[in-house]
Amino acid sequence: MDTGRFIPSRAFIEEEALQYSLGEVIRRRLLTLKVPVRVMKHGQRPEVTGRNPTQVYAESKKTLVVRVRKEKEFSSCKPSAHYQLPLATSCPGLCEYCYLQTRLGSRPYLRVYANIEEILAEAGRLIAEREPEITVFEGAATSDPLATEHITGSLRRSIDFFGAIPQARFRFVTKFADVEPILGARHEGRTTVRFSVNANHVIRAYEHSTGTLEQRLDALGRVNRDGYPVGVMIGPVMTFDGWKEEYRGLLDRLSLTIGESPAGLPVEIITHRFTSRAKDNILSVFPASSLPMQEEDRRLVYGQFGYTKYVYSKETMGEVRDFFLEEVARRLPGARIEYLV
Ligand code: SF4
Image 1 (cartoon, helix red, strand yellow):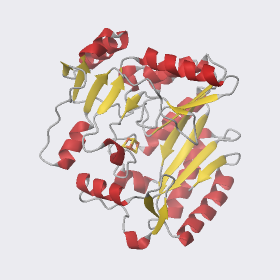
Image 2 (cartoon, rainbow, N blue to C red):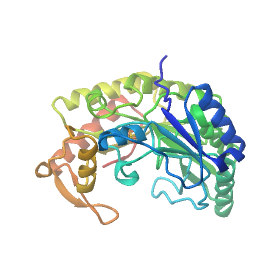
Image 3 (cartoon, protein in one colour):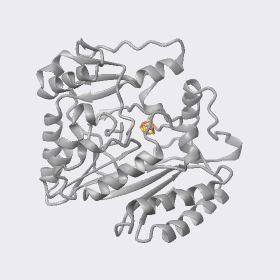
Image 4 (cartoon, protein in one colour):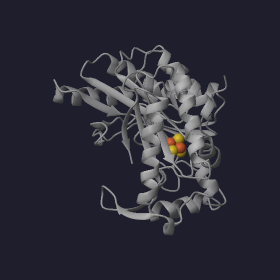
């Protein structure tokens, strides 16, 4: 089955990255994929050109940079995990609503790291520090690490690494579907693979260059059969004409994919929201976007970190909440809604 495997248009490798065995492995893989590769100095910016912000953004997303990650510290990742595991930054997807747009700026080229063993050594140190408590790492806080896995292998290496440590847990979420490279890894049930899915209407209108819904569901079935704990993230939920029918259909397809849903299947549900800054960024990159971002239709609330965001009205939120509580219980019995915001 076609999984929409990502092939960069160009790649830049830092000189220092080639001193790591993974740097050399990545270089060879890129050449096999016929990707033009240039070597550059540490800190140099890759050349990405385009006639307007839309083109620069799209070309950046097709540009891979292989670096040595110098910062030793991991960012915290509350409340879902203790730490972010820095496997990659950015992703080749072009989702119009992407939460990373505000964070990564106008040139969100993909960065992967050759010094994976040093990164995992730091993860091991952090785990030891918290023993005998469990330490949870999130692998998708700044990227979609599955998208570049066929080039780096870093995700599988991390899954094996955490699989060998009883006090470690690892989780990541993806909108991609090329799970072949992680099947058969020694996960020992310590890695949870979550798939981000949505109504087909939302995927077709606003998600570009990601796996299709069919591909993601197929991939979910495969990792589930491979014994991985799995999870589902539904979002951003939007209330377009016919939304209930479409989300019911999605839940039915999820139920068909994973059969008797594993007891406690974690389900995360996030409604669509936006900040003024995100809206400006989105419209500079996707000027014709039809994302529902009319402030007058929304309620302004203060976010966790002091900024304001526009969310659905209390009435709509209540309707969405009632709908999912009822339909998830009916169509995915045994599932556990971790949050519905
Ligand atoms: Fe952003 Fe995820 Fe879409 Fe990538 S797949 S563009 S990280 S929302």
